[in-house]
Length: 78
Image 1 (tube, rainbow, N blue to C red):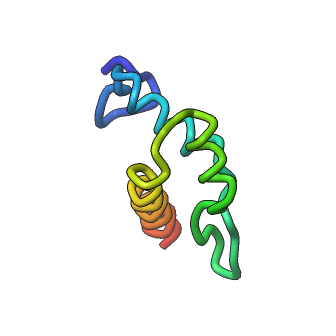
Image 2: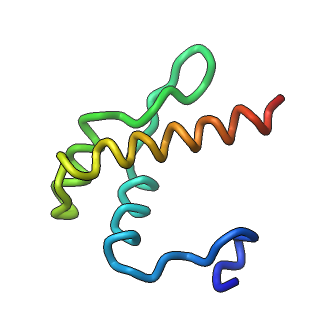
């Protein structure tokens, strides 16, 4: 494995994936009573625009990623 922090997969090497990962890590979460609810939509749209990525193409992908992230967090806390 190339990524010392991953025991599952290597870090993506293509530029598109690296931009998407950067947007995910730099977009603040929204929080509710039960913890993380999702990504702050306005910040997500701004981050996509600043990285010259299509909001139409990548918003749903990143929302799906954060939903998987939330499921992972919730499954570890039980």
